[in-house]
Each structure stands twice: as structure tokens, then as C-alpha cells.
Image (cartoon, rainbow, N blue to C red; front, top):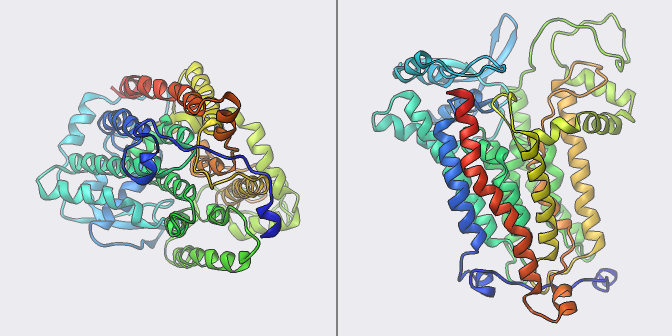
Length: 501
């Protein structure tokens, strides 16, 4: 503790445009919260109803996960088919049909014929259960599907058709995303501009307005970060609440588990071992859930037979029919340097695609925005970083280099683990590149980088001798994010509508 307490720190100043310091006491709603709920809420609302059902990444399998909850099914099961075992859940056959009725084959021409839409609307409840394969989502902890499940149940009770009930489920998923994201913006003591950008990204809103649980996970991670910006003296339970929320997140995304230890920042050597052990306890539910899923629900993706790739240490004549976790683990242990090179090379080689997917590639990775829109968002993200650095924060929350390095280290290792998990579970054995990585998988990680940014608001005020300098600079640098969010309120739903109608 002695070495840490003497480290250089930059004082900070806390303000809010909505009531100055009152928002830190819970007496005022921050203006970015209102912008988020109004602007992003309207964008999301239009996306809920303009995006055809199932036309968000992996949405049909997420629908199955949510629909199964209406029957109290928490854990899926494996069923043997000719191609191998498939994991799934039992769902009303009408819901299964409705979740796939508005799908079209991937390609440039993604318009849905009017006859197909009319047929989708005519689907009725079958009152007969059907096994719906949901590999890739049945393994996830179902807590983040609860809003969608409630929407389906409410829709059924009030006499909606299966398709209408699914749109009601989407609406409640959006509401859950907005409430969690809005609360994160309200309780954050610093870094609001960046939190707003991550929550307002086109990709985030598309996910938040769908059954894909990633929208809820991004909002949950934003809330964790917001709670970690609280002062331990005034909010002693905040970091433990954040750890509990993140424990639910890593039940669905185990490779992100190391970010749990961001709750140890700011580092203090006294009692660090005890706090580390206590924080580690929050990983136990994730470990237990993963063990249960491996036995009950996890199945590899099956395909045509193939010979292993160049990294395979066994015989080149060996034959596989699916990704093999044990075999790919053998590959990594035979080539330990590839644990770094594979993730690094993938990011470098596919950087453009990853950037596009991070900001927004829609449908089943078939709908992209014009290049200038991506450039706008890149500029807005850079401005939000500067706004968060220039912004004010609570006076006793000082910034230290060692804390920033700790956060960056956890984030980098998390990216590596995320990519390696896809190599092990999703990639052909021995391949020289990773399969399945998408830019949206970084959206849960990015909010934690807010904790690593220096906070210079107090220093700016002292240099300029004006108490509103930091606030003015922060606001000016945040306005581009607000402007593009308003632009997307019109542009993004129209883009989706034009591609499908």
C-alpha cells in the first residue's frame, strides 16, 4: 500500500450538465442518459419492427433459447442425428416456423417477397412441441433472455400470432437493453462519452433490438464498468455488485472471465491476496455452468470430412468431420507460440472486416454501410476517447499508470483467449488461421478500457483558471457522438428496410 499511495495522480473534477454535481448524489439525470433513451430508443424501436424476424446474426437459435424459457426449460439437451449429436430445446412448432419464415438466402438480393411475408404472418400456434436445434446459444445462461421470453409469453396470452409474439419479445429485449444501458450512463463517474458511443453503435443497437443476447451482454458490461467507476468509500458494494453481474456475463462468455479482475483496480497491495481470492469466487458459477453445458448441451459443428491443417502434429492422413477441441488443444501445446501468433495474425489480416463488424455489419454479415459512415464512427470514437480523458471525475478517484497497465493487460489477454476459444471449438483441426471471429465479439471488452484512460479534467481547469473548461471540452467532444446517433435514427432503420422490402 505504501508504494501505491505515493504514486503520481491527476486530480479530477466532477460535473453534470444536468444539475452540476447533483447527479453524483442521485438528484439529477445526466443529459446523455436522456439522449440515449430518446434517440437510441427510437432507433431501436424502428429496428425491432423493420428488421425481418431472424435477420440478425444467429437470431433463430436465440429465439429458441428464449422460447424454451416460457416452458421453464433452462438446460437444453443433445439429440442424435445422422450427422452427429445436435443440441437444442423443445419449442412450439409454430414459433419455430415463425422464427424462420422471414429468412432469405444470404446474398446481394435479400428482398423478401410479399407472399413470403404474408405466409409468415399467417402461421399459427401449433400447440405441438418441436425439437429446435440451437447449438451456439443453448449453452448460454438464460438470464439475459428473460425479457424476450416474457414478450413471447405475453404475446401468446393476449392472442398474438407466433410472429407477432416474437416481435413483442424483441420489443422487451430492447427495453431491457435501454434500461440497463441508461442506468450505466447515469451511475458512471467518468467515461460517459465512451460508454454512450459503445451503447449507441449501429451494431450494438441492432443486437439490442433483437433476440441475440449480445445486446444485453454489452449493456451489462457497460453497467459493470460504470459501477467500477464508483468510489469505494461512498459506494463500498458497487464493485461487488459489478462482479456479480459480470459473473452472469461470463457464464455465457467464459473467455471474458479475466475481466472480472478489473474490480481489483485501483490496486492496493495491502489485502490484495484476500481480495483476489474473494473476487475469484465469482468465477465459480461460470465454471460450474460450463461443466454442466459440456455434459448436457455442447456439441461441435458438423460438416464434410477433411484432413487436418499444417499445424497438426499428427499424421497428415488423419480425417476429421468436425472441429475437435482436444485435437486443437494438442495443436496449441505443440506450437505454443501460435497462442499469440494466431490471434495477432487474424486481427492484422482481417482488420478491415473486423472494424466493419465492430461498428455495424448487419443481417447474416451481408449488409454493410458505406465506407464514409464507418469513417464517421471512427472519428466519433476518437473524439469520445478525448472527451473521456478531458472529462471530470470524482476527486478521490485518481488515475495511476500501474492500474491502467493492469486493465490493458487484462483486455489484451481476454482478446487472445476469446480468439483461441474459437480456434479450439470452431476451427478445423490444425488450421493456420482462426475461424468464426467477428468484430462484434469485441464490444463486450471495449467498455473496460475506459478504466485505463487518464482523467485530466482537474488539470485542465487549473491550467485555464476556469472551472468549466473540462466540462466545456468534454461536452464539445461528445456532441459528434450525439449528432451521429441522431443521424442513425433515420439512416440505420432505412438501410435495413431498403435491403429487405
